[in-house]
Length: 513
Ligand SMILES: Cc1cc2nc3c(=O)[nH]c(=O)nc-3n(C[C@H](O)[C@H](O)[C@H](O)COP(=O)(O)OP(=O)(O)OC[C@H]3O[C@@H](n4cnc5c(N)ncnc54)[C@H](O)[C@@H]3O)c2cc1C
Image 1 (cartoon, protein in one colour):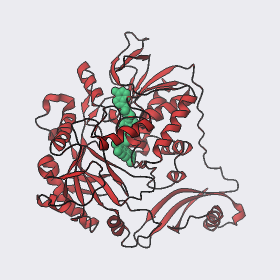
Image 2 (cartoon, rainbow, N blue to C red):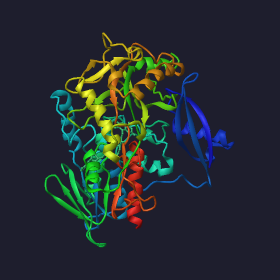
Image 3 (cartoon, protein in one colour):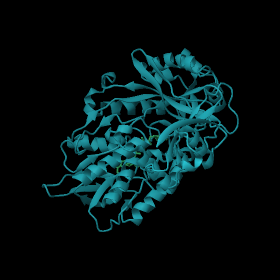
Image 4 (cartoon, rainbow, N blue to C red):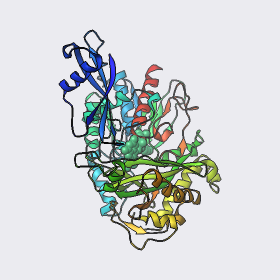
């Protein structure tokens, strides 16, 4: 097998025989000797004339063929049950791995199935009501279901990323996610994918229980005993192993741990604002004015050291919309999502700064929940300074000058925006760094710092502000045998793919015990 690179015009999708010809040239053999040419990766290069750079693998006669992924889900109707709390990426991929290993996942999910969930999400805008169990963070598929579905991750050490991507494709995601350098699925495709995963799990004998918010957990009384898991509707489930994959917004789970005196640790996270630009402006900047119809809309990724700390872009959504992703009825929290085509007129991203335990003076009395309470206080301040989930907002240039905006540009955030002085609503150490960062970002992306960009508060659910500590070998909670903290809520992942990988790792750990 030989790896090689080849560039192709952005608008040209090379056919199989074209790739084989390229492989023959790269290997110096006739085309008839090329058994297969596989695309490993496709990345956009817009530094000069925009092209796709392909990384290809040529398999010649006599070479070992490329690895095939086969997912052998067992019938687990009568198998040992494992309780999985939370049906986000971590809980879902843990459940798929449990099926492969011959265990029966019993998924307890506080939210609703993807279809019912859509109704509750639209009620946030239509009726100004947040359902505490069914919203942008809670429900089938977890926080990633109504998102851009970006799938790139730096966490290759956590496991086999291809295993996650190939399962997503098998359940209906686009083939392109297997090769794109920055793969994404889109908010229109993700719900379908989650639904077919659920169908696979139930057809093989696994169980889904929607509307099952876990409110209490009791450890086994003896070595051979079982955990008892109580839901808000009074139902009780028991199993010797429990995967806790409740995500970073399940504040009641952290509070439950704190009330029982179970180990928790405060964990740094990042907080800041969402910014929204016209997408054409980002395309112009990133493609050096060469963007044309048919080209993918441009993304960006920015990082800048300011006063000894990184300010960075987070979860950038080309052609996307801003969404109200609060889980509580007295808070404003923003996030972004895009459809698979990324065809909207706006580009949004979080621009955030890290928050460490030493930053949150005045919250010490909350112990390991200090950063969580700090996060909540900022979200509540945003809510108190706007109405009905509208977001406090300012033009970027006004924000940096500390001046109220007398008018605001059109914005994709459906609940609407209110002109406000964000400097007074954000923590000082965050606001001061953001003010310095925006003009500095303009040096890297000329045109980024503009009167036409909107800054909105607050981007706060970037990762978990709490860690549920676990043993690094068994992946079990450090003092609660049989309880496996998993995914982003446990503080061991950030993003869809890394949470899925953590779910797989935890299921493997249970199986190998
Ligand atoms: C709008 C939005 C856009 C995003 N875009 C992207 C993106 O493009 N790419 C990316 O990588 N990441 C994105 N993220 C982040 C990503 O969704 C998360 O990192 C990921 O979903 C975490 O997976 P998880 O399974 O650990 O937790 P979650 O996805 O948070 O899932 C936890 C699940 O547990 C359930 N739960 C919580 N408490 C209980 C309880 N007490 N009882 C029963 N069930 C409970 C919840 O309802 C939820 O379904 C986005 C997030 C949001 C909100």
